[in-house]
Image (cartoon, rainbow, N blue to C red; front, side):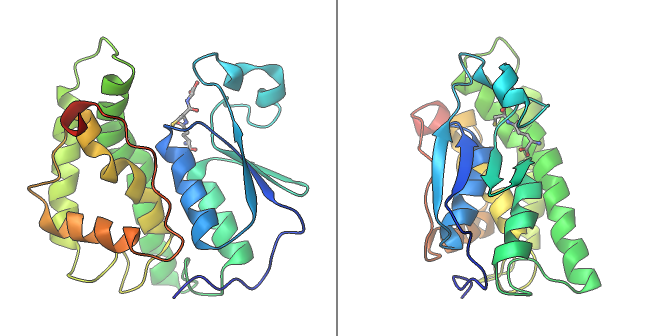
Length: 216
Ligand SMILES: N[C@@H](CCC(=O)N[C@@H](CS)C(=O)NCC(=O)O)C(=O)O
């Protein structure tokens, strides 16, 4: 199991986040799975705190998540997962170092920043903030992605091989919460079994569920 760490931060890592952000949840989940000490700093996205000069000094893109780990300030959920796994996880656990394993993980990080962001995450945001946008394209993209993932996942396996990696953590949050954006998980049994395997990992922490969409 991957709970062991080979290094520890001298002081708690600061995680700037918003409670309904799946990107921020990825980082919270990884910190928790690695048993690293951390504090969460709430950023009021609705009040546009992420565009304040103070926050833009942390992330010029004006988005959560950001971490501060001693003198390291780092934005972008997937970049943070790479950092945490490389700096704090036991070697070759959450991020393989062999050429093919590392590339296979990167492939899913690209999916997390691509098909997931523009599929289930986008469908959920429309519902969550009652945006005046048509969610049908995002819902269609989510279903296309879930069909591919359902066929890819092996019973008892993870996205890359037989042990969890940061690929699983990057992809988990918005897929688990897809029903909030009116994307059903029921047609995808392997995907649901994979979600359950992640939820059974020691140190798993859920993202707060919002009672909207199919989750109402
Ligand atoms: N590529 C970034 C995307 C982060 C992102 O989209 N954050 C959203 C919350 S889920 C945000 O801060 N939105 C506020 C804004 O863009 O003003 C990552 O992976 O961290």
